[in-house]
Image 1 (cartoon, one colour):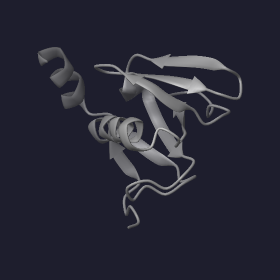
Image 2: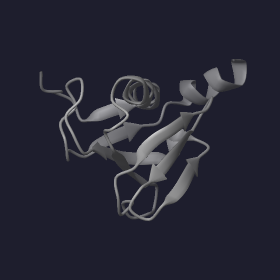
Image 3: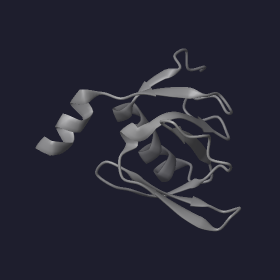
Image 4: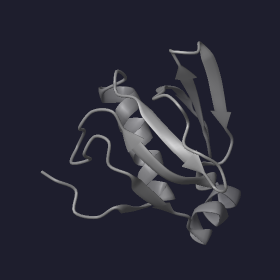
Length: 105
């Protein structure tokens, strides 16, 4: 099943990361933050937090911590997963409701 849309909400991104960690921890993700270049390497998911993620870059043997998933502008996966295509640039649409829901939780 090919994913028809390239615009993903922050909530959908968080759900995707959770599913990847549980079902396919071997799949890597790389991202681009607002105003920055793409991360050089694909990384694996180590841990999800309330609003962020901890990733491991196996090539450089470094950890990357993102405290706020809404700062991700684009992401891509290195393998197909649940309708997401590999090496396709998905755009993340930040939602004001997402941040508000974090404050209420």
